[in-house]
Image (cartoon, rainbow, N blue to C red):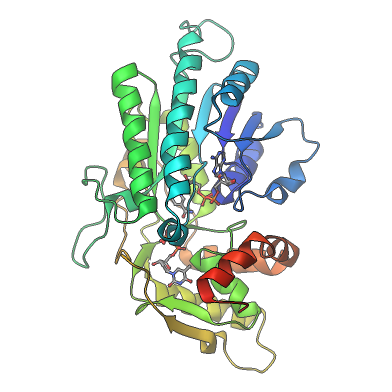
Length: 360
Ligand code: NAD
Ligand code: TYD
């Protein structure tokens, strides 16, 4: 049995599916079901006894204590977070509350639970020695790279620039301290930008697919030459599984696809795939919808991951190329129009209206 937090969000839901398919080991999924958490992401698991979804906050100590005592997981994988940089600029409070304070309360409850586990390897079930707390974090904690800089290694200093990145950096530091001070067996992963199924269409790739099909402008912040290192979400899930299995306790592992792309190039690639799979009725290209808009304040220019540590130590390598991953992703969104319309009503609508000034 493992416990995941935030398993109804984008990466968490992909991970729950991936985990159950690969291992069959049961999962307790603690998720607050914020705007980003969607039970529909787990719809195919309804009635599957290997998955329990519990709606609740990682900061709710009593709930977390009770879940740990009842299910006695051998590992906790912490995905839950506020995750969107633009939202963290408009309202940083929720980021501090969930990513920093929430992680602190979760850590305290996990530490309490872990200290009650039997030490012995001969005991059945979870043991102190084999228990793991895996913290899922981001490359954004390292700040921004200049064009000539080498990619981020695990030894890079933390230089977070956005409220989101700062809140994740703070949580990474808490994880580190709970290991060094209390001996909690932790692992931290810092991954680059993910894309794939179930991503909420406020992030660049699903937003562009959704806007393109709806005939709306495709907003490019600034000059569109900002660089991100894109990784298909299933490759991230595989990396997390490898780190959980074989990562060295107390270590951090950078995860990335060696796939640096300028935003404008990403958007043009998506337009090209859509032109091939679902051409516009008027015969023109989707790239005509590209619109340059005001830049994000404090916009980081470049992220890139040096993934040599996880590759050398744990034998992980991304399986998907950007071309194959984007094709799969666009196909998924085309085949899941109902999912998209479900998540783009309500809270999403209000967000877009605030961002772009009225229905767009
Ligand atoms: P997401 O926003 O899609 O999902 C977050 C999930 O956490 C949602 O299901 C939400 O309901 C839940 N949640 C939020 N606050 C909660 C709380 N207080 N208690 C319990 N659940 C809560 O995010 P994502 O893109 O799936 O990211 C998951 C994790 O991976 C985050 O920690 C993020 O920082 C990290 N990460 C994301 C990326 C990326 O490209 N998306 C890259 C690297 C790391
Ligand atoms: P995003 O998906 O929000 O991820 P992050 O900010 O965590 O990297 O954005 C990816 C890149 O795309 C980032 O450089 C900002 C840019 N972007 C746009 O140009 N237009 C958009 O509408 C969005 C959402 C992002």
